[in-house]
Image (cartoon, rainbow, N blue to C red; front, side, top):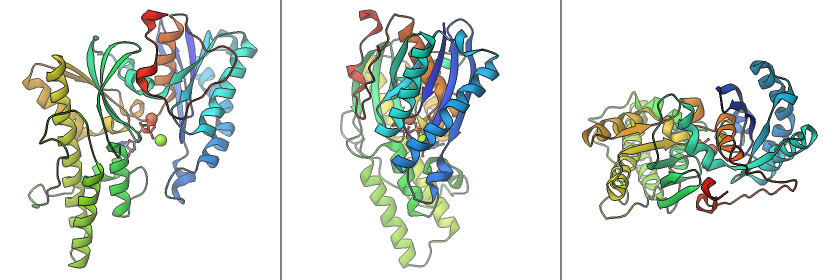
Length: 345
Ligand code: ATP
Ligand code: MG
Ligand code: FE
């Protein structure tokens, strides 16, 4: 089954074709980051309009790359939530209409299920059950995965998402959006012996929830103190970036180990934009080796938003006979646990 995947939930137009027999055939990502940069964040109306402009031309490019004609597609999967309503509507309308014109099924896909399954596009894959750490711009969640659509939330952030914390910290020291890769790059110049240390929130008590808003405040306080004392130079910023990245990564690693232990599992998937972070990958590899476990993740371009993950997640459900019918239903908010198991269909 050849599935066209459309991702338009935020500021990336991601288009891909996944073939259940031959794997990923083609994919393209167009990022709107430059358009939103001057506003310091994503402007929803601009995002929707740009998805409208870019989706059809990108579908043509992806078909060409795969050497296929439209009528060789078997189904279309589009992101139907969670995300920005206008942006979701753009992809859903195009996906649904195209499927209607081609007389093939269409399916609305959960954006976070897309992220969660993205590591399955890689060569080495875990077997279910496993624990998933979803770490993106809008989510920080630990989930037990027993099958497609069999998700149990183990813990989540009570305030900011990990990616959001990176983005806000970056902004505080004048770095552009998205802040995660910027902080990570600057941290390379940081001195681990600088003496700067930020808290590992909520790790000193039991539980699998997270909180990153206090860490962000601690970062701001350190920057203000350095500014007051006129020592907020490039080296100080790099030291602060390193201390911040280390604090976020340590916190995530501690909770992942705890979740695996609680569930009696040894396989971990990390997904979402922050799973591209090399320090996080490295620390998890080290920690999991100690318990004879393994960590799985997607290539960097499939950690952040992309069409391949939507084509893949959609294909798993479409293969099972699920589809969304003719009416369009998109959801700005949508808990992962509400998804049906594919076993039920
Ligand atoms: P959601 O998926 O929750 O709706 P989103 O789609 O905006 O949110 P993603 O595209 O998955 O989020 O990820 C973007 C986030 O990942 C940003 O917050 C960005 O700073 C962060 N990020 C990307 N690369 C890295 C990195 N190397 N280190 C840390 N954070 C990173
Ligand atoms: Mg994005
Ligand atoms: Fe995302």
